Length: 270
Image 1 (tube, rainbow, N blue to C red):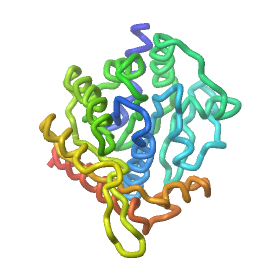
Image 2 (tube, one colour; image 1 turned 135 degrees about the vertical axis):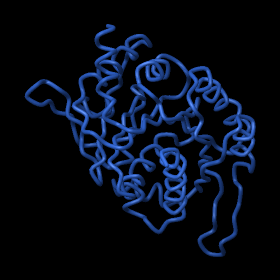
Image 3 (cartoon, rainbow, N blue to C red; image 1 turned 180 degrees about the horizontal axis):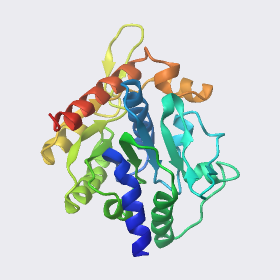
Image 4 (spheres, one colour; image 1 turned 90 degrees about the vertical axis):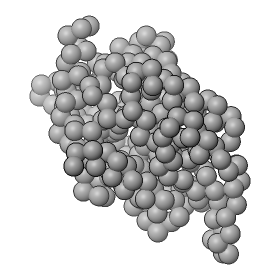
């Protein structure tokens, strides 16, 4: 097992920046945010990979429009990432199943081992960014990633503007702190709705969730992503939002978020 862990760590050294995306709870759009950050980074000319560590609820392929693709092995038996839009490398358990609707019925310890084996067996291509989409909670998958991924650049917390999300996402913030992982900031998803006719902004779910969380953990709000019908329209088309609806309110907010992440992460190198 130790040799497998070392192999997994070694494999990930091909990425300069390694960012984990957490929420602590489901239903806040964490996988959507992860996939759009990845695509936004690619639009900004970065070489990007995404690992979907949400073994039981893998949805990164859906948001990137590659749900019908599957992983294959090379001549050495290594798993080849699926190439998504703009060359984004994608690794996800869902892309190994006969159908994306097939359930993965594994107990927690098996999930941790599966993640280690997956990281170690993938033929990763070198790149600037690796984004890791963590499942809800702070259990086996999150612990495994925190222990196996070398030199994590930081964590992004995804929340929604309500008290329940704020309380549970705080668990993810405390998890990151316990592993001495830097908090890059908070993304408040479903932050507001902007009327397409009059431009009026309505805070449907509340107003201060992201701000309170960021203040509590001495970090910043990286971005506020609106409730936007374009998100579901793009999903219905089977295309990623940033490519299908580039002028949408959500797409503009996501690209602003991406630029802020690049400034923070790459600014440390200057």
